[in-house]
Length: 292
Image 1 (tube, rainbow, N blue to C red):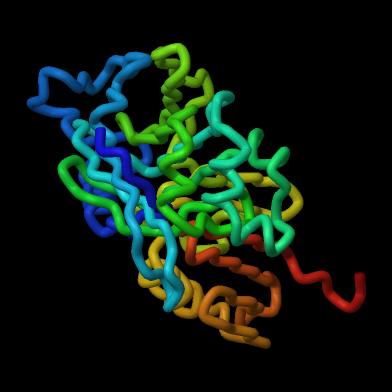
Image 2 (tube, helix red, strand yellow):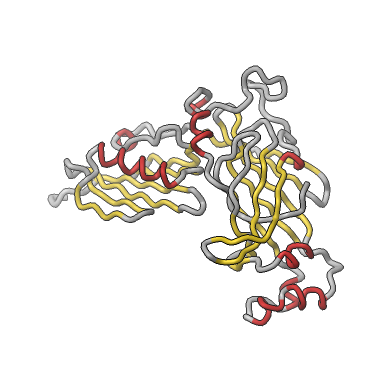
């Protein structure tokens, strides 16, 4: 595995959604689910369904939004569509204070960390756009929480600690962990139906995003839903679908939000899109009449 790092993963959702519409639970097809001896359509995946070496990541110097950053990207060499990758790096116990003072001089000077802090620091990234088998993600800046990694020298002092991979199989999202310290794989018991949606009148009052990977739904007094791997184009298309469904009254709209009532004055929708993470939160509720 190439020792290189950058955060962020480009949105290859167009390909992922093409797979979604092809079949599987909720209209999401598992890549390689048919005619592939290694990926069985009916069987749950193994703990090591995706080997660590199949997430071929690279860390390099680059530029993001006009700023010099340390960037992370990867190639998906597995048989599955990967929808999220998180790689955590830890500081080895034997790193000397002098090495930390040299590599992190700028962050120490700016008051972000002390040398003692740096011994416990974690470098990480969340990659939340779909990457089809054989495809390569986009690049995004590596971070220490809210602080950007500022040099490859910092990265080179650290070692891989934990790799978390979310992937599609038979219309469901599975989560796999690889522990670098113990060289072991674990498959989470939590499995998400990527095709879920509500059955209430509220759920029927709003368009269901076509081919979307739905990670959570609450079909209670108000209908809420969460979607992952949504590109900016997907968000714009969904806003257009809501407009076509009549949500065009008292509109408040930005590049990442859309609030509106429907033409009948019975329902209100709130959409919040996080472009860097490719995530959408949606809320639909009844509009109380003045008599109430």
